Length: 361
Length: 258
Image (cartoon, rainbow over all chains, first blue to last red; front, side, top):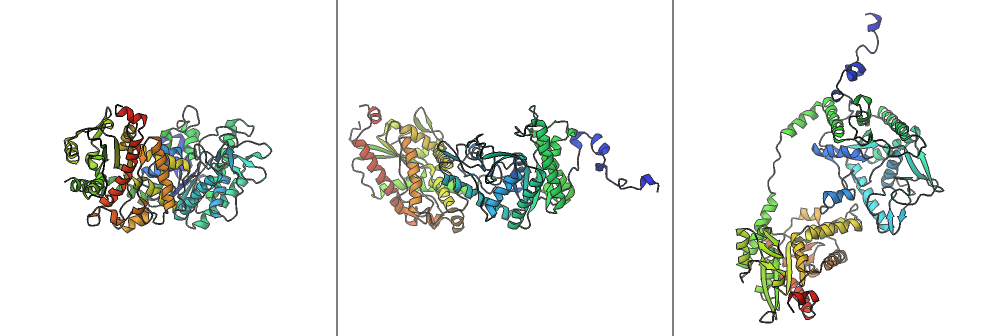
């Protein structure tokens, strides 16, 4: 064997080489981007949480008949639009967007830790807003008590969801955040934007760094796995750029900094833990190989085709790694679940007729 | 004004008006000074009754036939001005679709809902019911009572279904709180609520079997009620309508042509 044939790159697959895996490919044909560590089958209960991009996961899972956990479902009387207005069915529990690792840690601490989180409550006029999720109800709450009872319902749903789930999908969104200087409590949004009042003496801007994010995520894993030792965690990074930055940098470079940090943390956590995996939805949308084709003209919003492509890659990689999942999916697709009028409804209609006829002769 | 000087009252609805008819047939209600008519059709045919230009009319042969059977006076269509008062019963507005799930949530550790969400639910419960929208229009010109279909029948609903959907520990106060909210919402539409009488309620959010339709248990009929139940509703409704009639509102005076 000649020296040039005796090196670690010789037997690597095509996907290891840019020329064959990327440059020679139509972007939409780039494949095998992910080698999942664990299967996500339709029977597996999946929780979704995180920044707004996580919503696409739940929709795709539901569309394919997967067991997405809706632990805090909307009351049946609400229309879809009304449910969405009150943030039901957006994530597995009504947390609203969880943009940062610290926010997730706060939520999980409230749900599972005996240690109390020193959380503020915002008041705007006569209404009360939860700084953990200030937009969860369009007009806030009528009282502090109502706010806390609603939050407790969400925490209970979170406990039940985590204990019954197989996979926890978390989409990491931001590094920039606002905190209470004294207590360290982190707000979902900057005070004074949608609710609350900004006070520079009490509120401070924090751009979280790799070490802190990694530490918060490790703490999250500990809380999650203490509640459910078999729980698997799938991390993704939101490809949606920052709306605004308070870092002093240009929003473009601030976005790069933020997403790169999150991507690095996610990758290292996946490398360090067998129960943690990273799915590269971020790369599929943002990488130059895709030429920005999945962004709307504002270069920020991800268009539907982008989401579809991400999710088709997700399932394709799952099926490639676990062929039994592909067989299962084919079987499910061949089934024809045609339904008629529910038997109970038909029976009830018959009973209505009978009751009326008996009374009116 | 009616020739015989009696109050003309119409009981309108779907198959749930059967309990009122039974109450009348069984002589359970004092109808002194009342000329009572029934108008409506059972569930599937009830859906074929539509309001057009202020007048309800059946739109299919089957619903026309059923209305003819229910209304012995041969009244083919129905308008607010035809009567001095209305009692809407059932008519697809079901306690089991609003009160029951809310009472059930009260017993769940993650069931709490804000007042804002509850208000949206209430508005949707009322406004998504076509008969309620009709009632709202009629109530602009004539006194109108509305009795939603009562709680499901105890000892008929399977126990596993009860365990999964009924808060059997729901209190009188919890029910009253919800009924009060409904009453207030209906009042803004000029409608008087006929809440399910507390004496007929058992196990939190069910109707006592002695108020269920005669063969409910044998037939597995979870929804319909009997004459005793109907009598409680009609007595309450007539008391209100008689009282209202003695103090006519301007709207009623206009409707009566006075």
